[in-house]
Image (tube, rainbow, N blue to C red; front, side, top):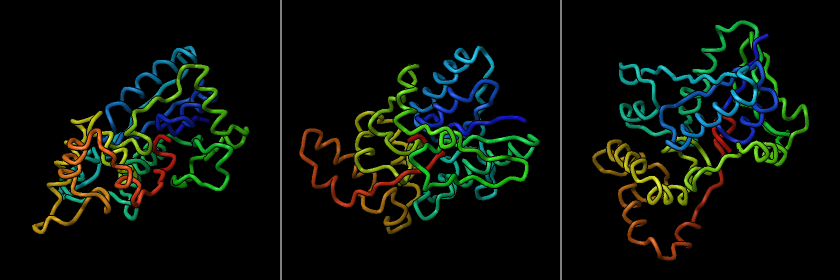
Length: 257
């Protein structure tokens, strides 16, 4: 039976590749809108795992094919650009169309197989948000074998593979993830200016004539104003501003955690 590993680049999915990756294929569903740092990590991890498993491991990258106003696009950025609408907590089309659908479409043609999903032994109250294909056996091996998140971290540290993401990547790998906090977007202003500028451009293009719709986050200023605030207050005390209305979200097993 073919064995596939749902790979996001984060702690649990990398730990699964170490523990169960020999003879397996890891699958990374690429939205086309990930941070540059995420793509660099994917490449580093792939090279390390191929070496660790003596060449008996591979990692493939999938992209979606989605229709946006009559045109096929393969990236979330292009989809948002054409539709002028951002994903949100209420409408997570980023996950359904650009993460789940490409993986399901791929697995449908692979015959009887199993998919390893990276929920750890601390997460027994969670379920994977994957489709239920008749030809796929869904497994949660970290839970089956009792690996907690700390166990996974310790394992990665031993191999030099623990993620070391910048401050703007605490949650979500996409550059305009609706689950990012204001602090993460602030970090992008100073550490990833080209990426935050792309977010600004996308947001500005999505506004209606009144300029009041489609903010990345409802409790943030327009991204253009937010960027300027951050630049002007680099050494200021913005604690009250940041602490107001901060939600704690996770984008799930598809994105790094």
